Length: 112
Length: 114
Image (cartoon, rainbow over the protein chains, first blue to last red):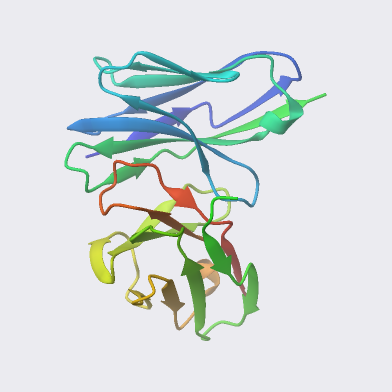
């Protein structure tokens, strides 16, 4: 069964600190993995996309990694800001291009 | 602004009623996807349309139906509403018909069933 598991479910950090969110998946065959940021009550917005051959990709203070062998991805946020408070959703596409599997998300709260 | 427009933003109705949610995709996008997000839950895929035709179906209840019109806007119809249907309903669009590209989400329609 295709699944995407994210951890932790929720996280509270102080402004300026770093954090890492995890995503484990069993989707096969794998096509790509995206991290989305969803502000409360808003639609998700794509942060990064990782394909099979990519190990690391950065988007400003966000850095995503992918280990296709262990089927794990992480999203590292550097020097967190209050505006980083949101849910971060890991989404994996299968190679047939006919299915997306969503993780349950990690809810991040950045406190001053 | 993703370019995807959803109306209404908020809707309050009673059990047993029927509502219609509307989505206008980004200019040029042929695919529209509908998702349901219940309180503190993940996004659940409901249904996808591509250029007016149904392409994929997820966990959509029989009480729910959707269509995509020639101008590519889409409507999600929810009938015989139950309390558990209260949720955020998101529409997303993208140019192609697959699931590998980026989805552009609207701001959602928040449905409250009392």
